[in-house]
Length: 119
Image (cartoon, rainbow, N blue to C red; front, side):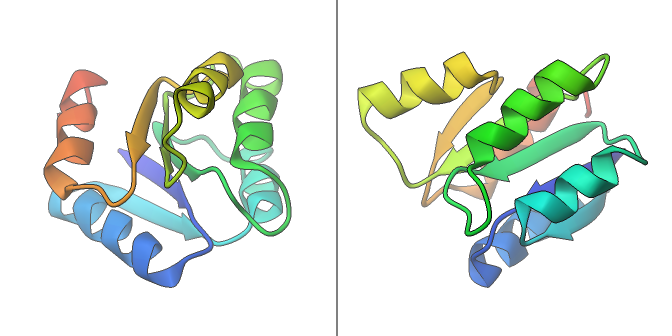
């Protein structure tokens, strides 16, 4: 399984990559949304893990793009520090399959792998 992880915070990205690799998957890290979108035009991923707040565009823009341009779009976990009810609704409405708040426990993401049928 190949999983893309998008987060501009190196510590958060390392943490997510650690969970991906510990589960036995191939992780591909991205620190910019545009780099991930460019790769998605050429390659497929079994799962996306996307942060909301990014320097070049919103993680929600990435999710919306996948829903419009990929058939089928990969399952997507939105991992963010945003925690208001309105944010959760907005993230899910954008097309995220799951909403995980930072800081997160790696077991939660691994449980989402199982839920998505990856384990």
